[in-house]
Image (cartoon, rainbow, N blue to C red; front, side, top):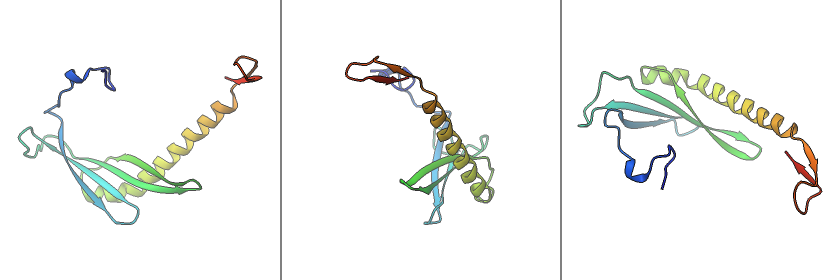
Length: 124
């Protein structure tokens, strides 16, 4: 059985040199911020590597809430919190651009007559 990277289940291994401890911060309204702190294989902090920050939020749409997740380049929690609004904005703009691209691709599909059984037209 192959996994996402084409490796079999027997080949899966934990990268002990790339371990992180996760902390979650939230304002209980709209913002969640994950801080991933680098740790060594024995569980102690690894000061040689910087922490990673990941912002999470939900934006409302006509179809309901849409979850978004985005990296935040920051060295401290205060810095990550200050950059959170810009991260949300950039993630939403990227999502909108991707949707528009999908709509453009869908609109440019060529209709070919009789290519599929039971249908008079086929979209390509």
